[in-house]
Amino acid sequence: MATDYFGVLGLPRTASDSEIKRAYRRLARDLHPDVNPDPEAKERFQEVTRAYEALTDPEKRRIVDLGGDPFDTGPGAGGFGTGGFGGLGDIMDAFFGGAATRGPRSRTRAGRDALIPIELELDETVFGTTKDLTVDTAVLCSTCTGAGTAPGTHAATCATCSGRGEVQSVQRGFLGQVVSSRTCPSCGGTGQVIPEPCPECAGDGRIRARRTITVKVPAGVEDGMRIRLTGQGEVGPGGGPPGDLYVEVHERPHPVFTRDGEDLHCRVTLPMTSAALGTTLSLKTLDGEEDLDIRPGTQSGSVITLRAHGAPRLRATGRGNLLVHVEVATPTRLDAEQEKLLRELAALRGEDLPESHREAQGGLFSRVRDAFNGR
Ligand SMILES: [Zn+2]
Ligand SMILES: [Zn+2]
Image (cartoon, rainbow, N blue to C red; front, side, top):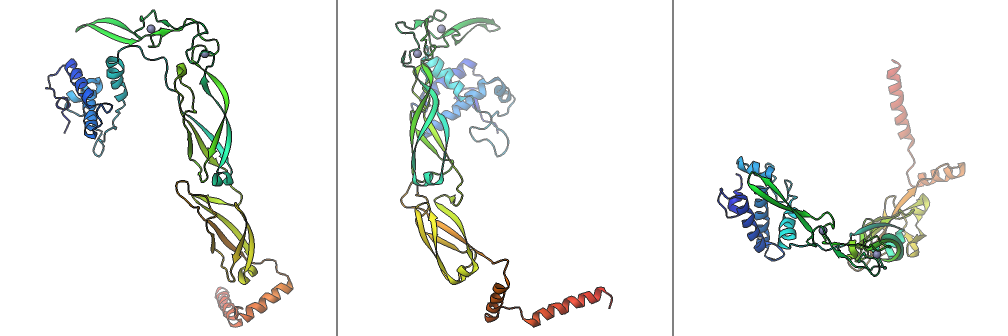
């Protein structure tokens, strides 16, 4: 069933556009999350905003008038935010940016965030490091300190809009005169113009500059993580507060170790004899040389765990483990002497292929062969 959007705004179906506008404005002022922290109010605010959009957007209103629901995008859908509900910002601008806080907007705006990647070696992500990064970014213009005016001059009131930041135009229509206002094209809505722009920044209040930033990379960061440097992004237009800088970690592959979160993995290959007899290996870990005890009878595929030799846990204490995967190499290219010894060993262990077995196989094969030869 289609939602009664008039009812949501507390209006009869005969309500005019201006009544809809007035009702919404009144409700939004009480319910807006900036003034009413109650979560129920927030929900209600979204409801009334949706109703307002349904009744004022011509395309959506057409659907409402036909008895449909412009936000109903089919069964299973219908969550808030689906169905092209992108107009909230515009609506809020219309009421709170334009109408409610009428007047020129500030020349100064906040700067954008920036994202830069850094490549790090495995030992740097595991143990942490400090890196100097060179970034090209917008910084405050030191000549005008953001004002955008040439030294000794000042900004002037915009002659086009007399400092109001918007210009009005009157149009005649069926319903009489319609007054509409739009952002002043001369000053961009700021109500001010700069007669003599700062020669350094051409009036923008900021300049592009290359600077070096020192980033402290904490021990245990992982590939893809972002380190946030508050206020290190670019300065905004008119010298507005800077955004944040995000440094995204890219971990270079290591020739020996692979990383799985806080654990490291590596592979060692042992001769069959060492695996059988046991031995001690010297293993180069990220922490330095470690003795790796190979117990007699170690099987291929077994895993030896070196505790706390992995990466530190980023949001906890302690470290992960280093897991050493053992592979046993079967000897190849035996010379006569070696083959003899292995045969003797096999015989001693009762692992030599018995004559009877070989005969049985030979017997089977000869029978098959006989069958094919038609004997
Ligand atoms: Zn400047
Ligand atoms: Zn203007």
